[in-house]
Amino acid sequence: MTDYSQLEKRLNYTFDNKQLIIEALTHKSYKKPYNNERLEFLGDAVLDLIVGEYLFHKFPNSNEGVLSKIRASLVNESGFTLLARAIDLGNHIYLSAAEENNNGRNKPSLLSNAFEALIGAIYLEAGLEKAKEIAIALLEAAHPKIDLDTLSKDYKTALQELTQATHGVTPQYELLGSSGPDHKKEFEIAVTLNDETIATAKGKSKKEAQQKAAQIALEALKK
Image 1 (tube, rainbow, N blue to C red):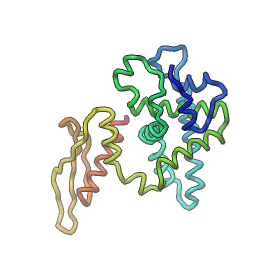
Image 2: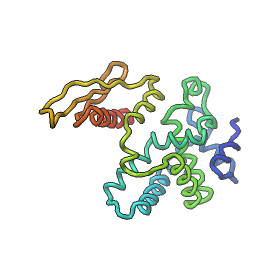
Image 3: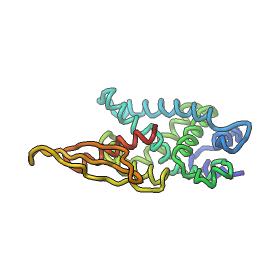
Image 4: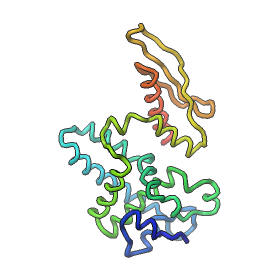
């Protein structure tokens, strides 16, 4: 069995009920009478509330639309995978040999789900305030600057991290064409994966079009 004491140190939290952390770290492939899916369900709701409240107080002058966009950029598979990797969560998950051989410890979906389950377990044992304290500390450490521009601008990096983790390849960007007068040109970019186009987008510059295409590709791959 995995030694989770180092994980508890990184979380700055020690479980009284060790079965809770074991359950949070148990993937369904491990074939135990329990797994982390129920705790993941709970942790997802808890993190949604924690981040929502955090942003509500952090940005008192922002409207609901802006707050929703910032939360959406944090509360998602990529966001939780980032936090999971920060505490080396992958090395502590209980997996089947087949899932282990399939690079399961690095799968974004698996890491994200385990992180949600872990927060769900902390919430069950210690309550919302402790879960919030731990989640926000990890969030702020992973994101030195939390605002809409910073979080949403680099979809290309997020897409590259996702495709390298899931497909083992880097996405490519191809200029499909441009239109309009020189002072008001519009560029169309396609993003491809293994020579297959997964998204296209237009922008006022090649860079803007690439970011938009990467954003669309990210959303498509996460479905």
